[in-house]
Amino acid sequence: MDCNGEFVYAPSDSDMFIRKILRFKKGDLVKCYTEEDGWVHGEIVETEVDDDDDFCQGQIIPYRVRLDNNDELFVESDDSSCIKLSTSRRGEQNGFAHVVSVHVLSKMLINNEEYEEAKEMLQEKIEMMRSKIKQNSSHSNVAKWRVDLSHFLCYLSEVHQASGSLDEMKLALVEALVLTKLASDKSKPHRLLDVTSKLATHATLNGDKQNALKYSEEAILLVKETTQYQTSFRLGSLLIETGKLNIVCNMRERGLEQMSEGIVILDQLCGSDNEEVIQAKEEYERSFSEGKTDDR
Image 1 (cartoon, rainbow, N blue to C red):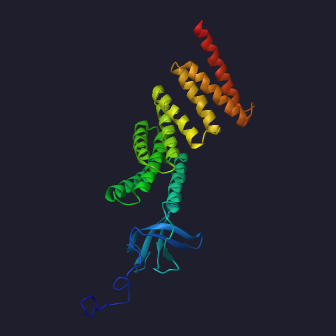
Image 2 (image 1 turned 90 degrees about the horizontal axis):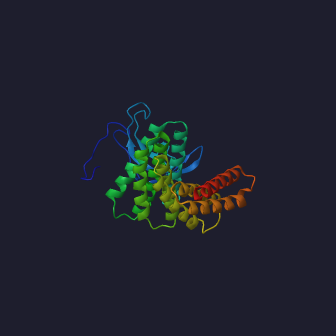
């Protein structure tokens, strides 16, 4: 009987003619049961899937789900033993896992020199996030989506760097920097450090010593902020590299001071026999000696 109280006849008991109303809709966050991994989280990307080949054998598949590891799963039964509504907050748990899994996959593609495949995957994620933000500007998750978008843009910049597309690398990083500066969450300084370091790398690859120095100096401050001014290998290495840039840019005194500070940190952490420490000391002595020669 339909909504008007009239009888409707189905020619056969087939999903093509009669089926129950689905419990979930496109966009719902769910968890699905798999034999290999148990319950896994994902998002419904399509409902009532009518496959053109013989996969369904005349039946309609209730759901197509994109899992947080970026795999896709067809759920053949709308039953609580197969699929449930996810009670996890994706922004805090599953969403982050999804972002990380995308980064892992993009790095694998870079290592295999499959740059176009990596770009295509990340562009799809980026456009999806841009669309979400544009269409739901007042949604409570907009801040979280901006964070995800900035991550994907940074990953895309890595692909452009690996493929030698420096102009595209810069465009991705500039957009990521704007999005990161809009944020107010606790992880903002860490993301700023990531973007700033990548901008320093871009400037170095592009032969732009002044901007490389500018971003490197900013990165030093961000490393100190994110580590609460504790010594670290990253800080020591960054001080040495920034010191060398300062020397090249005719700020020898500051450069030597930074190199010395970086060497002390690495010496403490790695020991005086460490290859990087030995090399840094040699470069420092050479720069110091050249400075004395110039002063004569």
